[in-house]
Image (cartoon, rainbow, N blue to C red; front, side, top):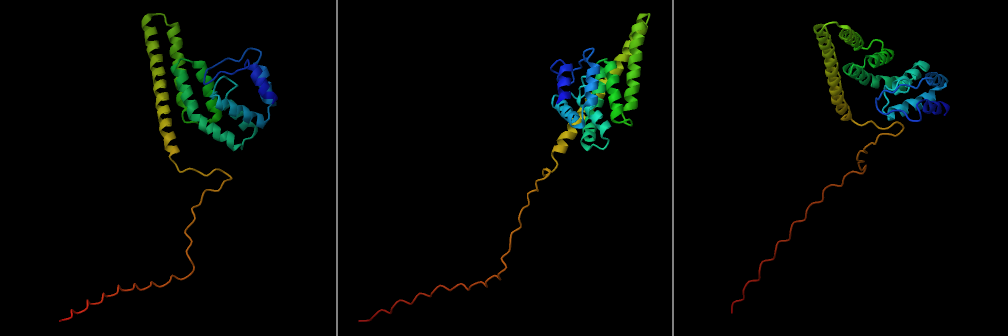
Length: 231
């Protein structure tokens, strides 16, 4: 599969695991984009599945599951598997944006926010996250360019408050997701597609009429003892 080989070459032979952010080497971005443009839908599905298994959900840029699914959806708007994967990844993407803000990674937060906007332009969290990132960036700039210590302290406190709120929001969303997952696992199991669900056979009744109950024979009465003979 040519595109998979190209992806491996661009990433230096091994992609980072988890959500670790790694920059694509300079000169490789165009090669990577060209390879993805040439990839067919089956190749994109393979890349997306491999990225999911490696926990490369949103990073590194261009080589992650959500971007592969977005490309797949752009090729086939009615692809149910791609749309379902994007819906499943959206809550985790919101948490990733919050965590990037909490770590003062504002460029990464904006990149993830753009992905969220591509997944769902009407996502309820979008306006709040956009405002939080803008406010945190403004506070960071004011802190950097502040002349006196008091102004720097106020800007630092404002940025710290925004980062703390983002971290608390990410933790809350993670807890809510953890609560929902066990609840879903307790649902009745669904039979695999193509295999009929087991059916418990009902007892088969005997078509013959039931025989009438037989009378129980009475126990024989013991004979009286012989009379004694008088001499």
